[in-house]
Amino acid sequence: MNVQDLEDKVKGEACAFGLKEEKVANAVLRSNIKSDSFKDGGAYFGYIRPEEAPSGVYYDVSFVIFPQETGGKCLVALAVGSAGFQRDYDLVSIPWLRRLYKKLASADGNTFLKNDFSNIETSIPELQEKIENEVSNLKKTLEKYKRYILAACVVDPDKDFHIISAWLAQYAQFRGWGNKGEREKQKVAIGKLLSGQQSVDVETDVRNLLKLKRFIVLQGAPGTGKTYNALKIAQDYKGTHLIQFHAETSYADFVGGIRPVLSSDQLKYEAYDGKLIEAIKTADQVKKDTGGRVLLIIDEINRANLANVLGPVFFLFETHVGKRSIPLQIGTLSLSTLPDNLDVIATMNTADRSLAVVDFALRRRFAWYTIRPQAIAPQQGQTFHGGLFREFCDIFERYASDEELNLQPGPSYFLTSSKNGKQLMKMRLIYELLPLIKEYLAEGLLQKAADSFAHLFYTEAGVYLYE
Image 1: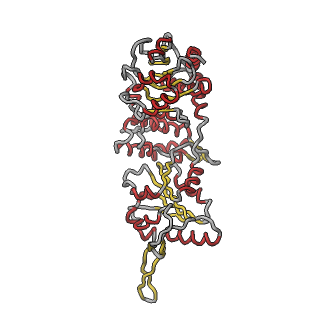
Image 2: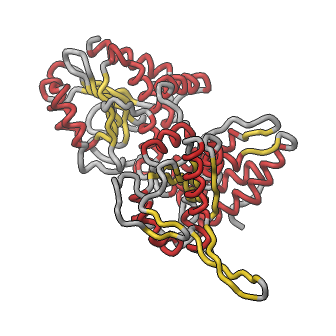
């Protein structure tokens, strides 16, 4: 389609999403698509804040499309006016806006985002390279506006107009356009783009990862299902061993040691096996009997002093070592490698702030899989309080830094018995989630989210976050 047709079609979508240009306006249309603007490299059209003038430099975040004069591919973008920030700096200084558009990113390499949306001093080099190689007619335009582009996607409107629609709908949504029906249309447009993205299947991901790397750490916040998924995967194995680490866990508990035995009034000492040696022996036996596999689960691996607990055993946790000629004496066994039919899944609570940083030696030897909170399907007799779960998700998505996302309570916090479910959830809010959030805030975390949490706890449970 030509440029005018594209602008008209985009405006039709904007009106469907709740655009108001008269009386109580919610946006101003900027259109600069005359032929001379293409020669100067300044052709664009889009929507800016209603406080801005219809021409001249403008402030703050806008929805913009940079077309080619001949049609074809265009650049749809979230961009800041060349005057910089006036009202939107608070908006771009939190991660929320970037995360909204990151969700819309496709896997085809056509979407580009700045890491920091408050940065209008530098450009996105990968976007420049893409334009130079594939849409060279926009090179002059990009050179003019490159510092102000926060997120962008190269789109062929004839083939993929739904992408433009979704980006516009996301702009309309965070700007608060529309009535109930128009907001529903925004959700539908965004949903069409998100529907092509696969949901996360933790079990399948971990099973596939175990085939590539036999030693895995499942990390995530409380309630995300780390141990639950490990135990579910364990059902695939011929044998399973489980140990939970804590501050007092020792090398003797995990690997093996000696203990006193009183026999015929004489004190003797005998060697005994820890969970690792037990798992190794089971793996050897299973391999002889059926050729199956054995799983060792180490729950809460970061609660112990790993240097003391693992000691020289670090040497054995290698998946690509070839043949070793030097054996290692561990407990009652002499080994150069772990059995090739022994897998290990460890779990780690990312919200426990009292724990030390995990040893880099462990990080190198294990694959790390992060389980993010996501909605779950309740079993019979259970209720998943999805609305409340989404409220927590929205607050974390809006305010939490990448590191603070590791603190978000998982879905098990929002799962109750169906009998008296509403009351049970209220009790959990007051006696489990409220203390957790207060602890985070007391440690200086999630400070920008404090007011939102205070509102949530008061409206949902009738309690104050602060006395």
